[in-house]
View 1 (cartoon, rainbow, N blue to C red):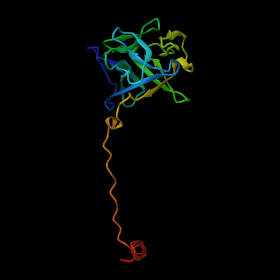
View 2: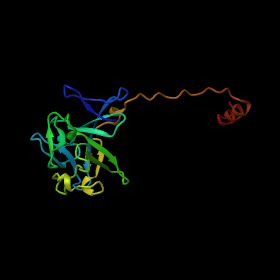
View 3: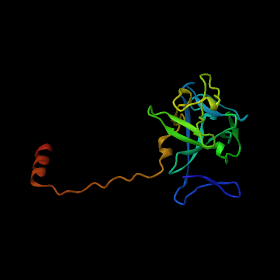
View 4: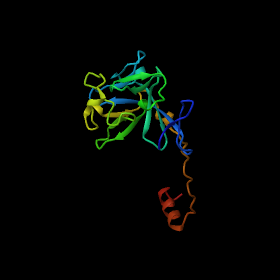
Length: 188
């Protein structure tokens, strides 16, 4: 599925069956041991604590795709990649440089490849600084992330569908069940 840009510059879906989903979670960096955050000065780093205000990210995706746009929930800036491979924050994340493809790896971590610059991944050093994307590869620890719910986020808030209880079938008691029920209740 491809995302296209209309004459107005708005990002739209390429088919009629998909719908846009927005989820809130944190991205835990495997190397820094902290969470990715988008700051008010448009900088992106991986130094956020669990549940920190700037570490909450809104991830927009289509229901049938692995392409995502990541926005800081507090600042409203999208994580984008410039032509030099640097991660930056942009107010309007409509370009292909702000779209990442989620790749789930064998070790259950996720790598985020930029849609515009094939082979360039979001990555951070041990100190949480963004790593130059042209020097990244999919299987490097610096490019591995884990999605986590923000601290204090209730699971009940994330239920997209209501779960209905199954009806309990009513079976008439047979002679055997009547007899065992009668013995358990003390013969009364």
